[in-house]
Length: 347
Image (cartoon, rainbow, N blue to C red; front, side, top):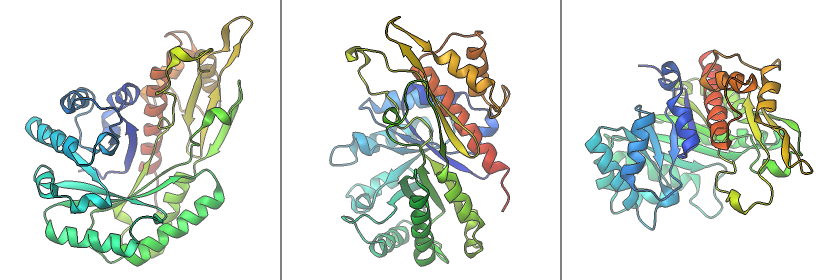
């Protein structure tokens, strides 16, 4: 069995679905996607779309479409049990005391519990949180428990340093020499939430990948050598903060094209330009694709589905593409980069 290297966090939208569908088999075997359900669709519809594009196990987070209970998740797990789809639900601290917890756990053998980093000022202390998880595991010994340390958005080096220290403290005080958990999934992103306010038309900007730097620092730390095999990298990908929820019909001008391209060290974001006099883009998706194709950071057409798409759209073999298609291209390439980077990393 291949070791899972990576847990990409993806909104369950069409662009992200196609990104997963077009991963190479060897890439799929090294990841477990964490799918965030953000639209209130019928559970069967979601599971059908999932089966159509990705047959491997997934983590699933339904918190954004739940009411005050976990009825939506319960329905999804019931259906997935009937269709032999492996769904591992994401739980939060308050879920551990749900009246329906036993019913939920009867439908899956594995869960992940999301833990905020740093500690939530209005939530439980880490002492209380980890003790509760330990007691939970004692009651449900057959359930595999993964822990997600969610560090959020890290765009500044000083914040990365602080979060690194906090995570090391969590590991030292709560997770070293413990057996109640299966893996420690360390999740964050270094792409800013609002790129539109940062990029001017025609810009190209580079954002250091503090998310991966933080993770690599942890797995190199000799203090954690006894648990390093249980560390798993996770990030929010390059499409979590996109304009997918904007009503384009209400805009005076179309959203300018933006392309996100991941390297081993940086996130690169390229933005198009529009001539309002001519009423058209003078730097469109094809121009941005050509800029990547001719750069020294392009990974090559054989590296991923996304990279082949970039070449074909840059050279005119395919059309410009729309926003959704470029979400697919960017997300697919990003996952391929992370899998390659972690596969080739040695401590």
